[in-house]
Length: 346
Image (cartoon, rainbow, N blue to C red):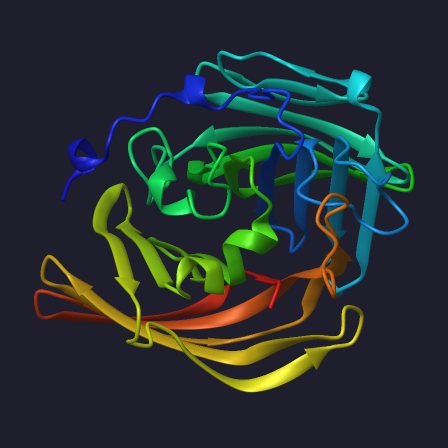
């Protein structure tokens, strides 16, 4: 595959989509790895995916979540909720503000200017790879498959990675100290109108930049109401060339091997300390082995309109991945660190 084989996805879809639905949620997520050893992430939620104890009101509010991790492993994170009146945005392209925090795209350059408490950043992100989604060309999972969740409604789930890999520059701020940074960055948007805990029992997301390779894999186990279907998606690119664009769906075959189960102490949620997977497409075969690393963030959230026995846990780790890649007989091994996300509603 070449650059021309990437599906055209309009950046105008990366917009404010609030439609007044009581269960509408949307996230705009960015994360960054800098050459000086710092990492950072920002999530602006025009409406939150759920209520976070100690942060949210008992409704789905606009929120801002920021995290910075220093080279020595010290973590700074802030979460702040806002009234709905403090969130606004364009419906044609990215220009979203929550409070004084801004995420905007002009042409093919993204501006992320955020500050809460003692941390913030002012960054410019330029895409290296074009947008990608494992869903349809507009980013939707087939809504008909969700109809059984809300037979009288029109539930949907939308997910697009607008910047699978990009180049970033700017400044971080920690307690008044400003730090110049350059490195790599990522950006995605997700939105829907049916709560995540009703869609997924477990959701995994892996994002690794391993030298010239970009590997991203969203995967999950759907809820029992959706027959417990397993999903495994994968994007593998070498430079700007897309090698794999995969969607596997299974009712019985194990697409991910999970092992070394642990309990995360903050949320009390179980998670696999190790994961293995393998797949093949277009003469490219891949075997992956992941080991969960230091925790970046862990918290729980719940759904005010749908009381459940326990909240949904959200976990992020800075983990290690080994990829063994065979490209038509060319064997390549890459090992490196990257982001691992787990959402556990089961």
